[in-house]
Image 1 (cartoon, rainbow, N blue to C red):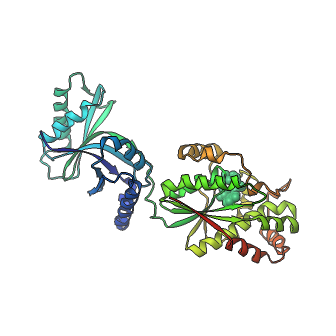
Image 2 (image 1 turned 90 degrees about the vertical axis):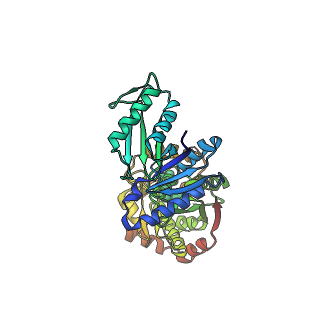
Image 3 (image 1 turned 180 degrees about the vertical axis):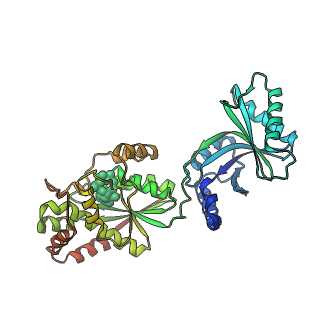
Length: 389
Ligand code: ATP
Ligand code: MG
């Protein structure tokens, strides 16, 4: 009987394309995997030629480890594999064991050889292993067109044999894309926007605006709950909390009512921009989607973000609500997002918001507010913070 180990083989597609950055990407992915698996202290993480392996996973931990890895950005797929010596006897023996628990009727073998010193070609290995498995598993047949499963053999320093694979998040390792600040409301869209940008490798931070006492403490708790959910795939999440009540009062008292909503947006963008500048964060992220509400027309978006200097990312700009909801359900934010607490956008809202606001007009409206900049800076400086693991 040859020596073999059960292990988890991690495949990380996209990062192998990144040329000179490859080392940085793999190192970051390694770090993120270690963070993701800190609840499983016994496991061992190794690197073998463009694969990462996780070994010493107890049978009772396996499902938990797989579930956790499936959420790590940058991992495309994981295979539940057997590792054995790179010789035909060992491979055949382990292939028969691996197939033994499949419960399927048909299969085919696919071989990849990263180690070209192996004396047989890939098709030769597949044919020989296939014949061996057939001889040992009565009832099983080879079907190259439509098999119930594919038995994979990878030849690297050792041989890896598997048929069970789990599709994972893909994307890029968190931390390879810099830092972003999401304007996180309690709604459906902004948590999805945060997730989507984090999935491209950007570590997210959040800013939430509330209007206590006009808005309830539950509305604020809701934003915190969303931050807590997002924290899992973001290696933690820091949420900055800013009270806009005085600013909303000032806008309501001094400015032309149809401009209220757009001026509120501009206040959010201004304060978010100040925070990003202070924390060295490069981009603002919002859940805006073209045409979804009055403030998200082309003119509305142009007018609100004109006050910010940072790069603005709107990953949902072309998404239908239905598609956003689908993602929200998948990432587990939907149920929290639909809790019925009013956020600050629903306070003082005009009956007929200006849907084609002009930047010069918005500026004129803001100039009507005495000491407006001081008000904004004061709201910014009085910010609170909540941190999630
Ligand atoms: P969401 O579902 O994210 O609340 P929405 O469809 O309700 O979005 P708006 O209320 O127009 O859209 O907000 C547009 C974007 O502005 C939000 O996606 C979010 O990024 C930001 N935003 C709105 N309200 C707040 C808030 N209270 N705190 C922080 N950001 C906010
Ligand atoms: Mg909203």
